Amino acid sequence: MVARCAHADAGGFRLWPIFSAAALRRKVLEVLTCGGGGGRDGGGSCRGRTPYRSPQRMPRPRPRSDRLAELLRAEEPSECGGEDDEADAAARKVEALEELKGVVGALQAAGGEACMSRVEAAAAVRRKAKDDAAAREMLAMLGAIPPLVAMLDEGGDGGEEVTAAALYALLNLGIGNDTNKAAIVQAGAVHKVLRIAEAGASAALTEAVVANFLCLSALDANKPVIGASGAAPFLVRAFQGACSTEQARHDALRALLNLSIAPANAPHLLAAGLPPALVASIGDAPITDRALAALCNIVAACPEGRRAVSRAPDAVPSLVDVLNWADEPGCQEKAAYVLMVLAHRSYGDRAAMAEAGATSALLELTLVGTALAQKRASRILEILRADKGKQVADDASGVVATVSAPQERGCRGEEAVDGEPADACMSAEKRAVRQLVQQSLQSNMRRIVRRARLPQDLAPASAESLKALTASSTSKSLPF
Image (cartoon, rainbow, N blue to C red; front, side, top):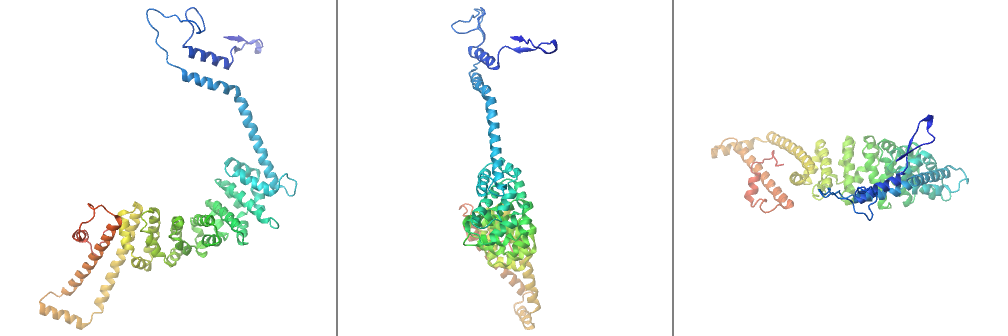
């Protein structure tokens, strides 16, 4: 049913529905609930009235529409209150925006003109930016970052309170927002934060400083800036220092790991003494993984980094020990990478690996390690094998060059007496070397079987089985 509008434009007419949307919905709901319209008598209501049914055939039953009716009932009040809800949401947004403007205005106020102090305003920024990404973006757009950076220079009475409030406000503004991280660095925060650290800050303030360096160093564009600022020595001291809190120590290591990703920071990290500090921390379970990751970045950055790691006290034995950590596959992979780089470039490092018993650990890693660890362990074994072959060849040439005439006559005398060929002495030496190599391989195989804890049906049953596994191996063909 429609009605003609009495005030149509230009002599035309417009059709307006008589029923409102809510009334129309109620009509549809009534029809669906009652199963259709009235009977043949034209009645429109289903209450107290029996519908007409043809005696020839029964009508096909209608599907139930209870669920649709429930949805219509649920939507009916929302239409009435939808505009009100939107208006309330818009009002709340305007109110939040005005509140943020007031906070930023308090930060920018030069004197006591604002309704709150700058410390209170910084605390409000910290609170609002903690879990609200939209608030972080809006506060930065309103200009909250420059006054917060300026607060880092304030001293005097209550200076530490002001500095701490500004540091934590900047920290929360930078979390999860790369644009804010870049803006904080561009505002000159790095040098001011470092000046606070070098002034002998308290443990709580040091923790805030380290946290800011960690946050800012997560952005690639900030890494060279922070590295060149001289922050590396402070972070290394915070990582090593016994007076630092546990949180500050972990954050310092994570910040150093971020800085080590940029090759341009390698000289700064080496000058700060980072490699020995990282090697000394190997074995501390909560931080070993990140320490090994930083070592990987350092040895790959430049030759000086590799040499610095190699010269660190107990570097090779500590790394070889990590190869036996079966429950830490990530640490095994990183330690194998560092050892692979060291073995590839330095004969002294290869000798230190052999002295530390790396061969057996590498053989085991090729059997039970991850795919990446197996690949790196195999590469190290190839390098050690080639180095061992060269050493054996050099030793053999030296022996031949220094053999005296009486020794040669002794061999010839034995040949005359025994009737053996002239190379009988050398054949005996080769047999002795081969026997020693096979004994070493058998010993290593027993150790690997014990460490791998193989089932009895898979483990070699006897010494003969072990000997069969290594019978075809020589000093130039290690089983890996």
